[in-house]
Structure formats: structure tokens, C-alpha cells
Length: 150
Length: 150
DNA sequence: ATTAAGATTGAGACCAAATCTCAATCAGAA
DNA sequence: TTCTGATTGAGATTTGGTCTCAATCTTAAT
Image (cartoon, rainbow over all chains, first blue to last red; front, top):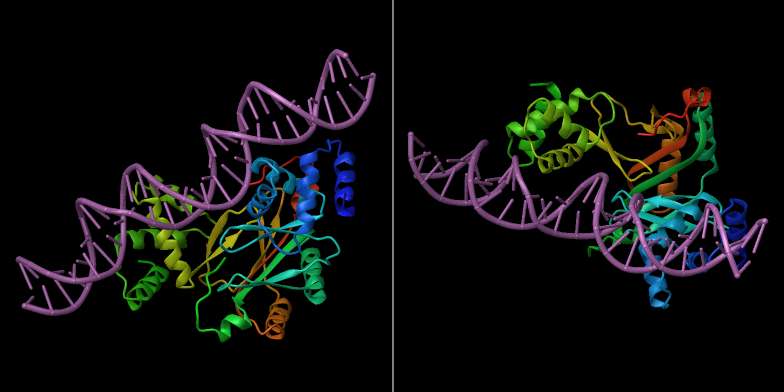
């Protein structure tokens, strides 16, 4: 079992929930994805491996992984959700290309600190945030050809 | 006709589209809403006033209003969309209370500038951005009682 | 005023993403 | 081994939104 999976197992047990083979398989697959993925990507990957796990379970497990703070959910302007695991990653935000869907990660400590400041000024207890910058990436600026958005 | 509605009418005409009574009614209603609203809120408001306009037309008109830059669309973590008109508003971002759903607007020039800087560094042509800070608002921190989220 | 061309509309079908239902199964404690 | 409550899968359902297409409306040209 992957270290990350074991960590999630501990979280599940601490939360008085039960560990299951499905949760193990899904979690392993999550940590095999080293970039953004959708719940359905995961479901399809598992199916291709011959693991028959229902969509409902995939969604339920992703929700738990999110609660455990091992996975975070990103929303695109299109309304679709992406996930990414945050093992070893520092917190980061995203530049999102409106043409090809590419996501570029960045982290800006100054922005983080301004956010803290604004929250404090508003007597707001900040729990998290979401910053997405939309535009056109360098590659798409060069190309005339229209890439299909994801 | 409201000034704002007239302005939108000009946009429609400049775009070689046609003005219609439905677009007028919807636009008036949009500018009567001085806070965030969903497409469905608008549809219901119009129905209560006895204006029979289909959902499809409401969505289509909001899309046009967005293109005209008179209305902006906000996405919540839940995946729902809110709209707000930006007549007289400066651009702003949101603090969103996870308990009561309250949204507090803020604007931070420093954050704006850092965003520009990051985009430039990544050869990214920034078109827009979306910053939401999630947490608990001052009121909800005081209250023990659980407010229902929107 | 009439007409023609093209834009707009409404009603409901449709769609994708996600959630819910509930009976069957499973995990872990006693 | 048994019991209780958690978990699962299959498919129905919900949600938020888009699409279709015939009927209607707008505008510009007669």
C-alpha cells in the first residue's frame, strides 16, 4: 500500500469510518495521477484496469479525500470539477488557458498574505481560497490553429 | 427604460442583434437586483410579476449581458452560478461564508497587480480572474445557531 | 403598406455531472 | 459466530443548463 493511501486509511479510522478495498483501490489510483483529473477520469481508469467500482463510490471517496485535505477540488469556469492530490505539493493557484484548457500552477506568497489581511479586516475566519486567472497561454498565442478546450 | 437597459440596447444593436421586449424586461429586472442572483431567481421574479418569459430566454439574455460586460458571472464552490450587475461597481472579489452563504465584496489593488505580474512571468495573456476566499463570517462566528447555507 | 430574410422566442426534449435510494454485502466489536 | 452499523452497486433521480424547431417578430428593402 502506498504511503499516501496508508495516511488516508488512518484518517478514515480516526473518523470512525470503515476501511474497504474499494477505498484502497480508488486512493491508489488518485495518487497515481500526477496531474489534474475528473471524477469520471478516475472511474474510467479503474474500469480499464478491470476494477469494477461504481461511480457513486468514486464520488463518495473523493469527497472523503477532500475532507482529509489530501485532495483538492478545482472548479473551471465551465462548471466542471477537477481534482488533484496534494501530496508533497505546496498550496498553489492556477492559470487556466481558455483555449486549450491547460492549467499552469503558481504560488504567490504575497497574494496569500494579502488574502489573510483582507480576511482579518473583515472579521472573517478564512478557511481556504480559490484563485484562478483566465486567459490565453503562450502556446495558444503562437498557434493560429484553434485547440479544442478540454 | 432604465439608463442601464438603454446601454445594453445599444450594445445589442452595435452587435447586429435585435432588440426585443423580452430583453428589455429581463434587463430591467437584472438592474433591479442590487445583489447576487441566480438565473433561476430571475426567472421566478419575472414569473411572479406575471411576465411569461422562458428559462431559455433568461439564460440567453444573461449570456449576452455578460458579453456586454454589464453583468458578471460568479461561481461558487458548489458549482452554482450567481450573477451580479456591475453598473457603477468597480471590479471586486468575494469573501464567502461557508455557513450562511453571505458574500462580502472586496477589492485589493495589490492582489490585482500581483496577478498581472504572475501572468506576465508565465507569458500568459490574462483575460480575467476569479478569487474567492472561503470561511466563516463574523456573524456566524458569534452565533452558535447553525444557519442554513444557501 | 408589403414582403422577404434572418433573428428571437417558448415549450419541452435533452444532456452531463453529480447525488440519492435501498437492498445486499461487508467490517469490526463483542 | 453473531450483531450492528457502515459501505457498496445499479440505476433512478435531481440539478443546472443547453438545444431544437416551428411560430413569431424585427428590420430593411421594396
